[in-house]
Image 1 (cartoon, one colour):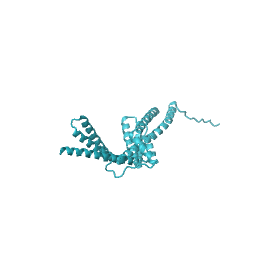
Image 2 (tube, rainbow, N blue to C red):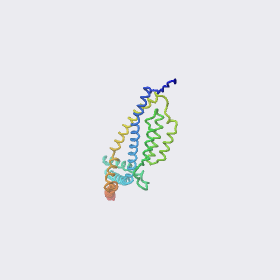
Image 3 (cartoon, rainbow, N blue to C red):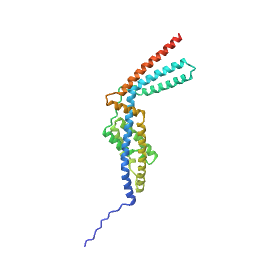
Image 4 (cartoon, rainbow, N blue to C red):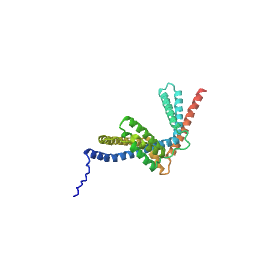
Length: 267
C-alpha cells in the first residue's frame, strides 16, 4: 500500500496578507503621482519656454519704454526739486527700469526665439519611470531625501531640455545603485509601504496646489490667450510688441519736449 502523500501549501500570515493588500493599495496612487509629476514638470517647462519667448519679443521693448519713462520722471523731479512725490515717482520709475533691463538682459544675446516645448512620448515615459523610482517623498531619512531631490532636479532639467539620453543615464544609475535595494523584514516593509502611501497622498495634494497656483498666474493667462488666438491666425505677442513700439514713440516725444523746455530755461 502506497503511503498517501499530502500536499501542503503554506497559508499567508495576517501580516503577509496585509502587506500584499497595502502594496496593491499603493500601486494606483504611485502611478498617479508619477503622472502628476510629469504634468507639473511639463507645465513648468512650457511656462519657462513661453516666458523666454515673451521676453525675446516684448522684453527689450518694455525695458526701453521703462527707461524712457524713468528719464521722464527724473526730468520732472529735477524741475520740481522740492516736490517729494515727484522724487518718489522718479525713484520708483528708475527701479522699474533697472528691473526690466535685467529681465530683458537674459534674452539679449539670443539669436532666435525659443521653440515651443513639445516632449516626445518616449521622454514622458522615461520621466514617469524615474519619478516612480526616485521620488524624494519615498526617502526614509533626510540624507536620502536630499540625494533624491538632487537626482529629481536633474531629471526635471533633462526633461525640459528634451534630453532622453540623460534621463536614461539617470534611470540606469539609480537601478544599479545599492540604495535602490529595499531592506529586509516583513514588519519593516509593511511600515515602509504604509508610509509611502501617506507620502504619495501628501505629495499629490501639494502638486495639485502648485498646478492650481501656476494656472492662476499672469504668465499662464497670457500664454493661454496667445495660444487661443493663434488658431485664428493672430500673433498676440507681435501685436503687443507693435503696441509697445507706439508707446515708446509717444514717450520719446514727451521726453524730448521736457528736454527742450529745460534747454530753453537754461538759455
